Amino acid sequence: MECLFCKIVKKEIPARVVYNDDHTIAFLDINPANPGHILVVPKKHHETVMDADNESLEKAIVVVKELSKKVKEEMKAEGVNVLQNNGKFAGQLVPHVHFHIIPRFQDDMVIISYKRSQIEDAKMEEIRKKLE
Image (cartoon, rainbow, N blue to C red; front, side, top):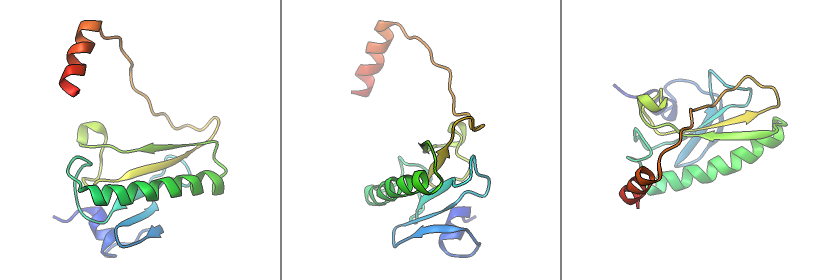
């Protein structure tokens, strides 16, 4: 079954497109966290950022940068969140790599949160060695 974002890329279903080039498309989220919430999508299908080719990601992140500036300015936002989720348990709803640009305003109702924890030094060093 073809994914929702691939259908948008192929113009098989409508979207409110704000940017479109050979590699990347960006459109308004149909269930926005705030007005002006944009999804930036590489046109090549890959489920997660780990699967995507570097060229697609490089092109997309430049679009993310430019649209973030535009969203902040045009929506008169006080800040901007750029989010990217990978996999169901990370909150990815559509299995096609994409970036969220969410304008933020004082007293808005958007909550992006996670519990922070303390990890003992020995465990931190063990983790660091795995990831270096």
